[in-house]
Structures are given as structure tokens and as C-alpha cells.
Length: 298
Image (cartoon, rainbow, N blue to C red):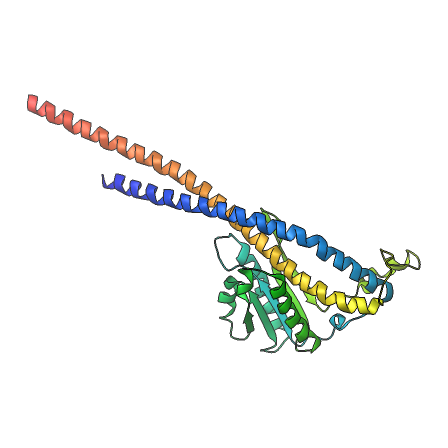
């Protein structure tokens, strides 16, 4: 009977866990739909901004302070994870990639010249243990991401770059593809790459006009570029955070679905074991009763 009690206790425990994971999956599914709508609505806007800037830069090779590529003496690594766990390998993949980038720069830069901006408690809890890093945390951004708040953070990063406090900015995050797939990405935020150099000879083969679109600019291209580049950089950081949030909820929804399925399979096995143990116990009792009855007859 002790064996039966153990199995019953475990069945109750697994059943309770199954209810929790199923509820968490439904909550994540609701959050995922909102996050998915946010990122799918943001991407065309940022893509159009990038296209306009690329056209201006490609056409005339106009440069801004954000295009200033100089020898890297101080680097800023932005690491975007989540504030909560139970989302599979979502956080561990980002942390592994971030650690690889940190190790890469450790071989090139002296101590104190690697700055890390952590967005997400999971990365903050790990990176705070590394004493040779200059760590800043912005975990609260993920609680209620608003464009104005993210824009202030982007402005701070841009100010550090233009004042030459930092020479390079990289962002490590999960890019959203669908609910089942998140693409681990390392993106160079600053300095901006000149589009004219990327076009190269292919652009000159098209003729005198290398721009993809023939825009009429008012005021001048330089003025527009100086206004649009900061706006594009702010939008890029906001898009990356929305990407990470959608990826997080998709990963958690998938993880909770797998956990629920595993709990269902485990319940089937435990129920079968319980029924077998109960049948064996009943059979033993019947044998004892029959044996007692035969003994009394004798």
C-alpha cells in the first residue's frame, strides 16, 4: 500500500504541474499575439527608413557623426534577454553568444574598456559576476516598452559614440521569425556602414543615378540625413526590443506546450503503474482471504 500511496502522490504532483504549465502556455499565447502584432507593425516602418537613408548615402556618399569608423578602443555590447525564465534556450543562446563577443574583445582591449548594457534580468544576474566589465542594466525596459523610453536610451548611446567615449556598439538578441523559431543575431549598431561602399561597382553599372528611388529632397539631403539617422537608430533599438519580446513569448509558449505534453505522457505511465500496483494489491488480498478460508475449513 505504501507503493500505491507514493504513486498517488506523484500523480497528484504531476497533474498540478500540468495545470500550471497549461495555464502559462495560454498566458504566453495571449502575450505572444500582442508582441507579434507589435513587431510586424514596426518592421515596415524601420525598413522604409533604412531604404531612404540608403538612397541618400548611396547617391552622394554623405557622412554623419554616426558613420565615423575609427579604431576600437572602447566597445559597448548591448545584451537583450528576458526578465523571466521558463522559455527554453532563449536566454542561454544569447548569453553564450554575448560571452563569445566579450572573450573576443578581451583579447584586444585592456580591462575596463568593455562596457555592457544588459536589458533583461537573466543577463544582468550572470554578467554582474564578471568584475572586469563595466555593466549597466536597463531591465525595466521590458516591463512596458515604450518608444519614448527606448529613444532616451538610444540617445544616450549615440551621445557616448559621438563624444568618442565608445567606438563601437554591438547588440546581441533573438530576432523573431515565428512562434517556433528565433534567430540569434549579433548586429552592429554603431558606427553605421556607408551604403556607398557596400554598393561598390554594382551601383555604377546602373548609370548615373545609383539610388533605387528618385526622391525630391526638401530641405537638402544633408539636413534630412542628419535628422533621419538618429530617428532610424532609435527605431532600430525599439525594433530589437520588440523582436526580443515576441521571441521570448513564442519560446515560452513552445516550452510550456512541450512541458504540458510531457506531463500528459508521464500521467499515462503513472496511471498505468498505479493500476497495476492496485491490481496486484487486490490480488494479494484475495489470495490471503482464500487461504484463510481454506485454513478454517481444514
